[in-house]
Structure formats: structure tokens, C-alpha cells
Length: 612
Ligand SMILES: Cc1cn([C@H]2C[C@H](O)[C@@H](COP(=O)(O)OP(=O)(O)OP(=O)(O)O)O2)c(=O)[nH]c1=O
Image 1 (cartoon, rainbow, N blue to C red):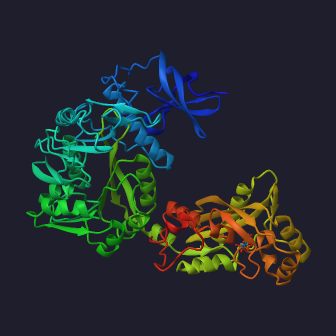
Image 2: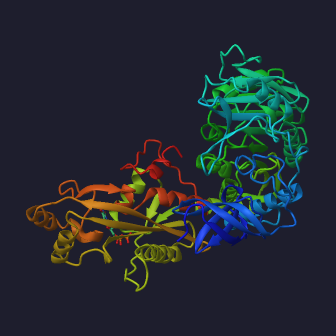
Image 3: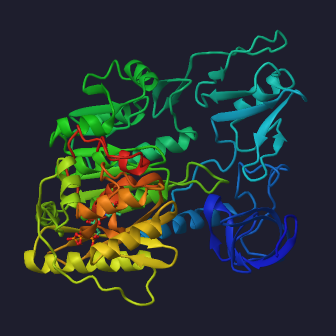
């Protein structure tokens, strides 16, 4: 058994979460801070959690040729930089590899991933510091991500010099606040410190609502809540790269979605006929209004990208999307697939979210032309990526054919769920026999049944997307299907009474034209109430239990057999909408859901689709 603070010897294989080197120890996943793939190290275990170990290098046994000494004496104690011990050229190789791996894990071709565009400055590039204050000791610093320990800081080598001097002016004088941020205009010397501090010993101004910086020869106002790239000179090169990828002729109308304070819109406006810039943050839009007021060919819209894109239709020749870490909203992906511009440039700071969204877009009418990572964050594992997609006419027909839905089911409940969602679909019974296969787990069993149902109907249809599901009740180790008789129904209901069991639904979606199938399962824990024998008998007499797994319907109001559940309600009824929608999206299918639809139950994942 490994214990906290033990030293373990591990061979490091690759890069894992948060930029740590990844390894395995006694079957456990290990994340090693301060390691480099290919090295053998002794590492101290810092944290043990359900999904593995976090450790930090104590001693390098076999060093990588890419190892160097970290510049900062707080490296390791502070987790803000993860890669100071790795030569910069290798940091860039690792970032390229990270983007490649993210694409491959979504089944995408990674051949088009270019070498990473290096930052002009390896250190001293950051224009934004967010600091925590320990009032007791009157010091500010950063919090270590793993240990949650406070690390006092008076200088930081990745910060722009201007930030270091502002930190010096604030040192030992910030005890009135618990957190503050400094933003600095590297090309203007302007700055912003928030919140406002009242200590008279502070010699710099604090509490400014905004500051200015210059990018690409233009001045930009940035207010405290608004986003601005942290590496100004490299952000200029990012803007140049985006312009190059758009291959503009000057006659285009382009959409800049998630436009922020209007940097890309302003820098691209001279090269196009019109820019429509969309931004939902009120503070950023206020800045953008100031920043683009002298540019007549920019139209600024304060709105959510996913809400406004459908109204813009095919207006644009090219679209730039630069969403937050979580990626693009499914509804925005849907609009982009139905109204494809000739060119789409997706700028992302999260390779996993990018890969997931690219998978959806390339199921639609797009082909990936180029993937260019850009290093905005040296010494860290973070990487910005510019993906260029082009409209692929040959894919559009298949994409549109796939949007026709067929529910492979005779279950009235499943039809009701889809109807309530406002979906247009045809229902066709699969008529397959649902025999149990020995050795399969309930999840595998439910999935296998769903896949078989979808396949049977796909063969009959030949085109469109087939949706199938299978629901089973698992009591202890026993799988309960539909009862064959009233006696069996009674026995099942007695068995389940007052206890908790699992309901597993498998869902499969199949592209009938190609046979491509994606399937998964969802589980809900269901606790039954203590119904009386009399209630039970009366319920069985209604006949309702006979077409239901486990002999009950959670939705049967008269009997009301369920005390409470943990998980998705619709999963128990037979069609977990959350799971189905995710699978459809992966297949490149974007059903139109009624805006009035409210999912039954409290499943947060089902509710996520409400506004899609
Ligand atoms: C547990 C439970 C199941 N059920 C139903 C859902 C399913 O219709 C049924 C489980 O059987 P399934 O084999 O999943 O489905 P089915 O045979 O009714 O329909 P088809 O194969 O044509 O799609 O049990 C409820 O309606 N409420 C519940 O609370």
C-alpha cells in the first residue's frame, strides 16, 4: 500500500493531466510534477485520490536530454509553471504532441498538426497576475494546485517586468484584501489593479476600471472583468496567423464569435468587407464599442453566440470562433453545420474540447485543412490552437441524410419522450428477441441489446439515423427483464420493495447508410417505497407491469412505486435523453428540440440540452 510522502520509483511515459509526466505504480495512475517523459525518477507521493497518485520529483535517476534547471527558485513549491525544467524547444514538441493526442483520441487524423509557433519571449511575457493575500503574514502569492499550500511571491519570472515592479510597490501593503489582480499594458505601461485598496502606504494607483494596451498597432481598452490574451506580442502573431488562414480577398463578410474586447475584429476589419462581432459579456462589449468605434465595417452584437448564429444564417463567408475552455455550445455547432461558411477558423485554448468539437464539425460538412498550435504560455503546459476547416460539399449530402430520425422501438414511453422533446421521428419496432448473453455485465448487456435493435431497423431503412434503447433492472446480481406473467410480476415487485436497485439503459445510435454505430449506457439508482401487498396486487391487476423491466413504471402515478432516485429519471423510464443527445452529437446529428421542452426529473445532463 502506498502512503502519502512515500518515495516511489517510476518510469515516466507521457504527459498527463495538468502537464504532469504520467506513469503507473502498482496499477495506479501517477501524475509526476517536475518529470519529463522518458525519464526514470524517484518521486514523493503528495496526494492519494480515488483516481490515482500525485507526486513530485525528488531525484532524477535517468535524466532526459531535454532537462535543464528551473529559473525560478519557487518552481515546484509553486505549481503555476509546470515545465520550467524542460528546454523550451522540447516544451514546443510536447505541446504539439498534446494536440496530436487529443485529436487521435477523438478518432481524428493528426497529420495536419503543424509545429508549435514559439513565443518571442520565453519569460517575462505575462501581462496578468492573479494573487492571493495571506493577511495574517501580510504577504501575497500563489496557491499550489495539488497541496493547496500558499506560496509567497515577490517576483515571478514569467510576468512582464511592469507587473514585477507593481508587485514590489504592493508588497507587505495588501492586508486589506484577500485577492487582487494586476493587468499591465506591455506596449503602453498602463495598468490596472483590482480591487481598489485604501492603504495610504501604497504608492501606485489601484481600482482602475480599465487599462489600455496596444496590439497590432491599435489601442485596446480592457476592463477588469474582460478577457484579453495574456501574452500580447504572441497574441499579435496569433491574429496574423488567423488572417493568413482565412485567405481573405477583401470582399468577405466574416463573423467573429466570442469576440471579447474586439481585438480580432479590429485587426481583421481592414482586410474584409464586413465583420460581425458577437460577444455575450456586457463588460467586454462596452470595451469593444470603444475599441472599434472608428471602424465603420464592424457590427457589434451583444448576445450569446449560440442564440444569434441561427439568425445570421449563411450570411458569412468565413467564421472565427474562439470559445472559452469548455468549447463551443452544441447549438452553435449545430448552426455551423447547417449554415457552413466556406472557411471556419476555430481558436481554442483546450485541445480536448477542440478535438471533441472538431469531431462533431467534421461529421458535418467540414474538412480539416490545418491545425496550427501557438505558444502563448511558455513554461506551462497550456497551448492555443488554430484549426482551419473548409466547407466540404461532398460531405453535406450525407450529413443532411443523417438528420432523419428513426426510433427503433415499440415502447410507447420512448415515443412519448421524443414527442415531448418536439422531435420529428418515425417509430419502427425492431422485433428482436432480447436474450441475455452470459458473461456480459448489465451495462454491456443493455448496450448490446440496443445495438442489435438499431442494427435490425437500420437494415430496413438504409438511410437516416436510428435510435434504439434497452432498459434492464438489476437487483443485486440478478437482471430483471419484463415479467412473463402476473405471478412473475408479483415476485419481482416483492423482491424490489423497500430496497435500492440499479436501472441500466443502453442507447445506440446508428447511421443507417454506413452502419456506423455509437453506443453507451447510463445507470440510475432507484429506491422503492414499502408498498403494501394489497397495493402491489392491485397494480399487477392493471396489467401495467407486464411490458416493463422490473415489473414497474416509475411514471405510473397510481402505484407510485419509487421512493427516490439517484441519477437520470428518463433513464428509468427507458430513454436517457442526456446520453442520447451526446451520442447523436458525436455522430453529427443535431435534432431540433422544442424550446418549451422541460425534461422530467432533475438530471443536470438532460437539462443541459434544454436550450440546444
Ligand atoms: C424500470 C422501468 C421500465 N420501463 C419500461 C421501459 C421499456 O419500455 C421497458 C423495458 O423494455 P425494453 O426491452 O428496454 O424495451 P421495450 O421492449 O419495451 O421496447 P423496444 O425494445 O421496442 O424499444 O420497461 C418503464 O416504462 N418505466 C420504468 O420505471
